[in-house]
Image (tube, rainbow, N blue to C red):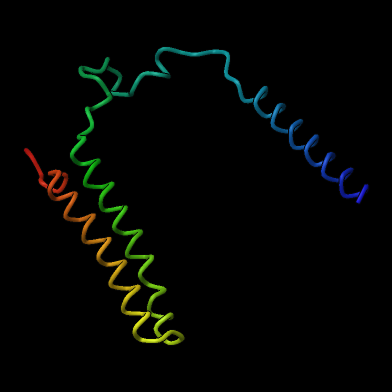
Length: 117
């Protein structure tokens, strides 16, 4: 037990030392205005390099991601079908799909699925 504690402490000390050394060595002290500005054929940029981000696009992507993860959670239900009784399978599957549909209707009522121009 004592040897395990010693090994753990050595690992922590060595990894902390390596992180400190890497952060000290990676710091750049010379910041050049030309190197930090966006490149536009040698000319000064005419507009801001940062474009405004569409919040509506972000909401659609977020809803897609949530429902994509929920569909991935439905995939194991296929393997559960082999080992469970049909009544329990259909009750669990219908409960889960009902939650998905309620979430979809809620997003629809909130207007998150409508694309505005």
